Picture 1 (cartoon, each protein chain N blue to C red):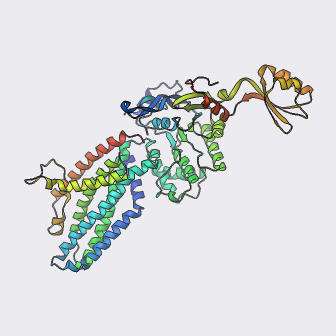
Picture 2: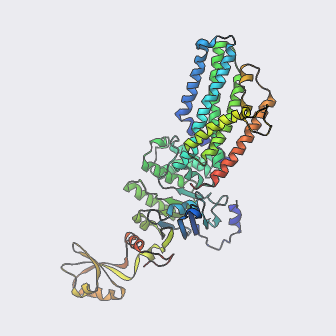
Picture 3: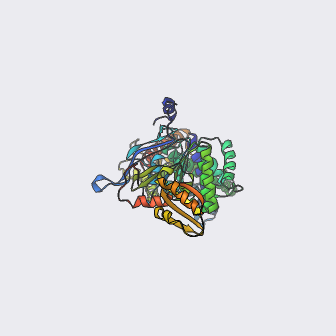
Length: 241
Length: 328
């Protein structure tokens, strides 16, 4: 386990110094700051619309960060052979895959939290309301990004950067569309869908979600990520470097 | 996965196990239906404890693939790989092994110290010890004062030195070095050579893959030469390079060699007043007397030795090699 954490720490340290993470987060935060000044913004429920925009921005920004980091990490390390000095030690390939994913999740989490806190601060200044519900939105977005990171890592364990990035986008799209493809209502419980993390309505227009729902999201995230990482480890394990 | 400690415990302590063992290694790419290609066909060698073993061969000979199979980076098609008597893929087998890949790269946004602490933690060293070792090793490879520099600012040679430092973290008993002098200036190459000799003096076993034949000749006790995925020759470097039955004579004198000597001598090379030539072993006493009578001064009489470069070139010109057999 300590090797997984060591690899995760290295991923965090490396990723946090990458400009792409902070450029995206700062850009999204700026959009969030200017959102209250948009011309069509006076429709009466301004703080709810602000929360909706903020969660959407949070999702878009973290999706860019997640894919940018997750699709590149393993292919680049393999191509540059930095992975050799790691795997030649007493480090299993699953340590490397899971450590990489854990590090990516932590970076995404830090970025989402930073953005969420900035958005709460803006909300407090503009609307005189501390919007703690945005943190509930941040948690859901983070859990979804963890699943998308696992899917991207799975693809990048075998394929290159472009393929993995396209796969990640397709996975995110399919994960939200699969429900709509089924006629006659909801999906059976065992069909995985990313819609479980879609909490825009309760966060923006309602009173958030309960602890049970949060636990359900965490469970879904763990199950989906676990399954994807299992495949990722198998793919990476059979690969010649 | 097998546990290395259990295998070690069951091994007999009296048997001097090799530090590294590669037996019948084979790596094939592609499917049989579309034509299989062997990167490595049949490679076997071992590295004895406390020795430096050179792995030589032209490009494409299978050196790097063999090393990668040993280190678990490439899945072998066949073969046995052991580190200190333990299957190389067993848990813990590589815990006491350092590896320097050819032209190593590192995460560029880490500092030299962070990178070494990272690799130290992976080697099972705690953070404090890793920090301490990082400082010592950076000094040992000539990177003192660079602890806080981002690796993106390191030159090729500096990265090579850092690669050596990370390979030595945790004081490994077995070290695998793939082209360790690559990208280094002559002073750096000398430092690497001295480092390897120091490590051997401290009891470490080293597998050195290199194109720099002078480096191999200077530090290796044994060599294995690969060609087209097979072992072309292997053995003690002196046994391989010493020309059986021939003695090299180095003499200084005025004028020409005595005629009787010229008839016996071969490979005569003249440089100023110094003449170097080879003679059959049984003629040594006679030649010494002849030179002495002619007023020549003998500077050296040693077994004739071929340069590794010549040996290597001659060996690889041969159409077929016998595995492990004497090449000459």
